[in-house]
Image (tube, rainbow, N blue to C red):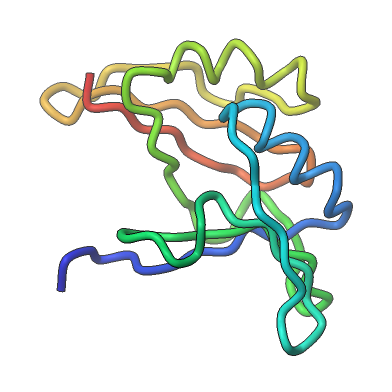
Length: 123
């Protein structure tokens, strides 16, 4: 097993707003597709690329929230840049960047949908 996490989805109520938020703060294009079941997805990276993958989803069976599963996004070398974009993109900084010793730095944000999302950087 190369990674403990293989795939994650972040639910949204307003799919376009959520995709815009993550595209903005991470500075990425998010490829979109509709699944065979009709669910809209926007990928953090190409679904065929190696490593852990994930997407923002418009899944009527999942609701955004701050008290569910917590995902940490890779913010290696850019955690301050990302935090600088969060509020302008419609989110909130829930926990500012803090050093966690030998494990680097983390921060917590609240996205436009009400999800708590962590950021992690080894440096």
